[in-house]
Image (tube, one colour):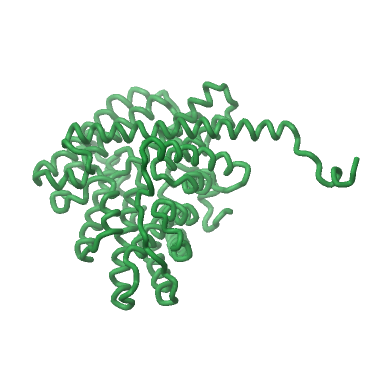
Length: 441
C-alpha cells in the first residue's frame, strides 16, 4: 500500500451511507417544514381577513377598531383558545411528549394530536391580538412533520429524533427567513452544542425550508434595514452599555414570565376563564395603545424606518411587556421569540435616543438592531444565534461587530443573574445549555 494511502485511510463505507441518509432526510424534512410554515401562515391570513376585512396586520386592524372592541376581542380569543386546550386537548392525556424541544432533548415522538390542537389554540390567541408569537406553532408543526416522516420511513429512534431537530430548524428558518440562525437555534439552544456532523444536516434542512418559503411567498428579509456602522470608540462603549442593560432586564422578563405562569396556574379557575380574563386585561392595555396587539412585528419595522418619540416607545414597551407576561402566563400557546425581539428593539431605540444626545450622528436604527440582538441573547442565552438571526433578518451584516459586543455583554450579565434561559422549563437541568457560563462552539 502506498505511503499516502496508509497515512490517509479511506472513510468507512457505512459512514458515507449514514451521511447520505441524514442529508436526504434533511432535504425532505426541510420541504415539509416549509409547507407547514406556509400553511399556518395562510391560516392566520385567512382568519384575519374573515374577522377584520383586511390582511394589513393586527396593529392596523386594532387601530381601526373602537376601544371597546379592541378590549373585548382578545378576551374572546383567550376564551376560544382555553376551550380548545381544556376540553379537547385534555382528552389526549395518554399522549406523551409536550413539544419539539422535549422530543429532541429527551427522546420520544412529537404527538400529532396535541400539536394540531395546540396550533389551533395558538391561532385563536394570535389572531385575536394576544401578545405572543406565531413562530412557536410554526416550529412545532415543522418538527411534527419531521417526526411523522421519520415514522413513515421506520427510522430508528435516534434518527427520528434527528428528523424532529431538522424539522425545528426548518420551521424557524421558514418563519423568519433565517436559515443559518434556524440551524444555530436548534444546535445552540436545544442540542447544547455545535458539531460539524450534526450542524450540516440541520443547516441543509433550514436552507431548503427558507428557499421554499421565499419561492412560494416571494418574501425578503422581514426587517430589512440599512443601519450603517457603529465603529467609533464612543459608539462601541454605548453598544456595550446597551448590552449590559439588556442583560439586566432579560432576567426580569424571564422571572416575570415564570411568576405569571406559577401565579395563574395556582388560581382555582377553569383554564378557559383564566385565558379569557388575561385576554381582557391585554385588551384593556391595547385600548391605551393599539401597538399592544400581536407579536410586535409591525412595530419593530416602524421603529427601524420611522422616527419615534422616546416617551411613546417607553410607554409601548411597558404595555407590551405586561401584555406578553399576561398572555404567556395564562397558558396561551405560542412563541415568545418575536415579542422578545420587540422588547429588544424598543430598548435599543431608547438607547439610541440617549446616544444621540452625546453623539448626534449615531444611527438610531443601528441601536435598535443592537438592542434586539442583545436582549435576544440575554433571554435565550444563545449569543451566536442572536447575532446571526438579527443579521439575517435585516441584512445588516456591516453591524456584526457591534452586535457581537452587545450580545456577549447581554448574555454574560444575564447568565450570571439568572442561569436559566427562557427555555429552561423545556430542557432538563443536566442538559449542556443549563451549565453556565459557556459558549459551546
